[in-house]
Amino acid sequence: MKINVGIIGYGLSGHIFHGMILKEMDKFCIKKIYTRSKKNTETAIKSHPDVEIVSDVNLIFEDPSIDVVVVCTPNTSHFDLASKALLNKKHVVIEKPFTVTTHDALRLMDLEHDSKKSIAVYHNRRFDGDYLTLKSLINEDKVGRIVEFESHFDRFRNTFKKQAWREQDLPGSGILYDLGSHLIDQALDLFGLPQEVYADISNQRRGQTDDAFEVILYYSELKVTLKAGMLVNADIPRFMVHGTEGSYTKYGLDSQEGQLRDGMATSHPDYGKNTTGLLKTTTETEVQNENGDYRAFYDNLYDHIINNQPLVISSKDGFNVMRIIEAAYHSQQLHKRIFLKH
Figure 1 (cartoon, rainbow, N blue to C red):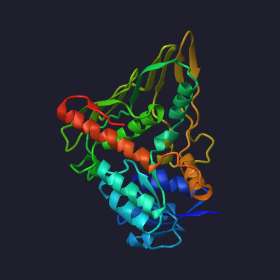
Figure 2: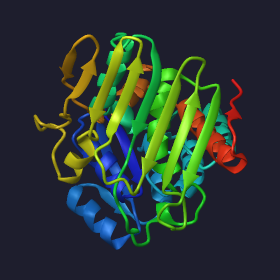
Figure 3: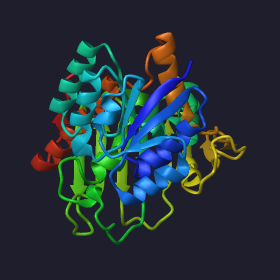
Figure 4: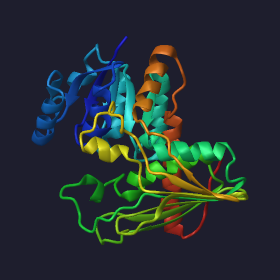
């Protein structure tokens, strides 16, 4: 049985992270793609010649054959589009971040419950190969009791992208909502909700919104540091883990985004391959990273809809990421740690 999909928005996310992935999965069929951009329409037609491209989003909501609506639009529209999809009895995939506020997240979760449909938040970095390897090392207790964890998502981009909504002064814009969502979701998946949150958020390029942050999550015996910036032209580890038995470090980002941008098919034998990491205990061991695979997100969604299996990344996960983001901005305003209620 195939699940029919409608994609709303066909920029980078809709094209690379959803369209290209779903196109190669036999379990899914893309029925309609909504976009009003001439450039994105041309890309969609070229990539999906057999799919109907529409300029009226209601044609997706009102299509009874569509089972899942994928929302790949700017963050400010997530709530409205997801709400309409749920009210039209569609399952929803929402690009991260889930919403712009926790208030909107809770309202969507109420609609999700009432509609008896599901929301899956596309935190695709859960399926990065280096992250899967890191998670296995932690679960296998390779570095002992963890006392410190540091995760980076750095870039060097000293100019601004023209008409990029993420760099404009809009609700939900800025690097904390963008790259921060990935780092926060991974940390919560590994360690759960922290007790306290502290943040230093800055605008280093003097643009319209934040472009660098350091967010620290405090647990009873663990400190988690999450950092990202747009003016980092240096080789800094992607992950560092320190424990009572040793340390683990991994350099470089997961390969999948670059491969997909270059047009590599997910069926290619090199898809998802990653560089190695280094485990230092009583000896030094080069750790071969697992292959990443973003298709796993949609495999899980299929099993959820068809076989009633639990979602790996649910609306609750998206909501918890929003809680940390809001606490981080609150911390920045007050210049102090924010206690997180559990």
